[in-house]
Image (cartoon, rainbow, N blue to C red; front, top):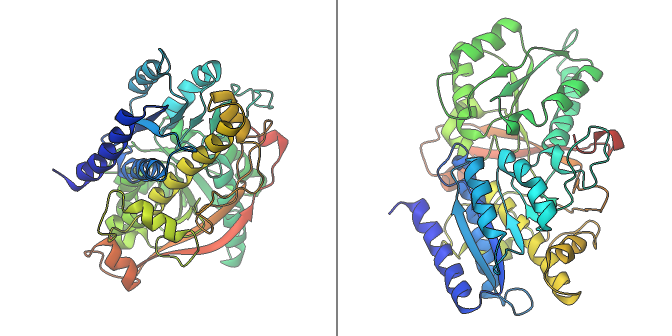
Length: 426
C-alpha cells in the first residue's frame, strides 16, 4: 500500500465508522487523487478529510456526526456530475459538498443552486463569486458556491500589480512584456481575460498566450517562444506538475522570465521537485503561514494532521492547510445552521453571511480572515504574495529541506486588490 493510499484509508476508516454509527449529516467530498491535478489534489483532499474526521472526533456538529463520502473522480467533470446526481437524490441527500476542480465546479453551479446544496470548492474561478448573476460579465448565478481564498482573477491582478512595481524597481526600460500560459481548459483560462486586461491598463505589452498541457511533458518549444519574444513576466496557470516541466525547460534554454504561478502552481513539494528551476517563482498563498509557524492555530492544525499521521512527523504543504481551513468554514456554518432552524442548505448558506473577517475558532493565525455576503462571494481580495527560494540540492525530504532552509517560501507583500463591482464574477 502506498503512503498516499494509506493516509486516505486512515481518514476514510474514521469517517466511515462515524457514518455507520450516526449517518446524520451527509457530506459529499469530490477529490482528485489520480487525475491530472492529483499532485496538489492529494494534499488538499487529505486536509479536508482529516479536518472532517477531526470534527467528528470532537462531537461533530453540536453533537451530530458528519457522514462523509469521499470519491476520487480523477479530475473528470462527467464523473463528478454523475456522482453529484447520486448524492443529491433520495432520502440521504447531502447537506453540503466539498468539491475540487474548475470544470466540474462550474458545471455543477446550476445544479447546486437548484438543489440548494452549498458547494465548497478547491476552484477559485472568479465565475463562482457572483451569487446573483447580475454582475457586468453575465456569469451564471452562483448562490451556493463558496471557496476560501482570493479568486484566480484577483490573485493574478495582485501579482500583476506587484510586477508593475517590480519592473520599476529592477530599472526596466520601456514596457514590460507579459504572457499568459496554461492549458486550454476552464481552470487556467478562468483568469486569462481579467489578467490581460489589467496588464494592458498597467502598461504591459501583452503577448499571445502560450499553451501547455495540464500534464508534465517536454515544453522546450514553449520556453523558446518566451525567449524569442523577450517575455519579462509569465503567468503559469496550471498546477505544479506541468508547471515544473516548464520551469525546468526554461532553465535549460536560458529563458530569463519572472514566472508567476497560480495558487496551485507552487508549494513546498513543487519547489523540491523543480529544484533550482523553482528559485524566484512568485505565487499567491491563501493561508496566513506555512507549516511549523508559531501561531496559535498551529496546535489545532497539528492535532488534525495526526488523524492520518499518528506520529506527528509529516510535513504538510500549504495546500493541506487550505483544505483544513475550507472544511472548518463549512463546519462553523453548519454549527450556526443547527442552532437556527437546522442543518439545511439554505441555512448553511445563510450562516456564511453572519460574520465579517471570519477565522474559524482554533485556527487563528492559520486561516486568512474572510467575509462573504449575499451579494458578493469574493471571500477575500487581499493577495499574499510569496516567493519560492531554493538554495541547494533538493534530494532530501521536504521536511528536512525546509528545516535546513534549502527551501523557503518567503512572503514579499500583501496586495489589496480593489473590490471593484465591475470585477464581480470575472
